[in-house]
Length: 159
Image 1 (cartoon, helix red, strand yellow):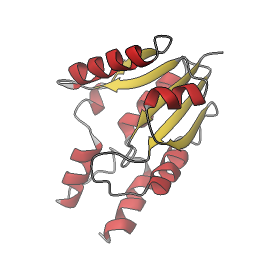
Image 2 (image 1 turned 90 degrees about the vertical axis):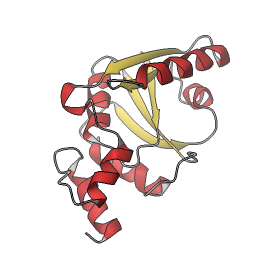
Image 3 (image 1 turned 180 degrees about the vertical axis):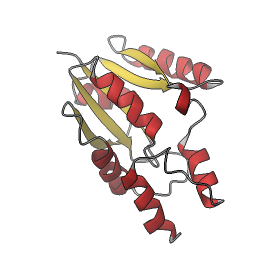
């Protein structure tokens, strides 16, 4: 049984994240989504809100669970018994960033592997930061996020 950790801020979870989780769930026995509690960047949703949104968005995937974590990602992976860290790769600068993270994680735990899923073409451009920015400017983001996230954004911002 191969367990994979899929860490991230998920502020909020997007259809791109869901796509990677769905595809990873077909490859690995279990996926544990790790919602990072203390990112360096400013977040719109609290940790508990991000966990709840991820759980709702992924509820149809029976081998996927969601939990919060803090500290090093390799420690989170060890805690959940993961042998693999899953990441999504978009077009452009993601490769260099993910490569550097993979090398640092390998240095911290040589037994952990990183597996990257190429983002589906429909989501190559999508990031949570960009999504929040265009939403604030009035764009229709309904095709880019799960329904629960659309509702949460409306409730959070009053739009």
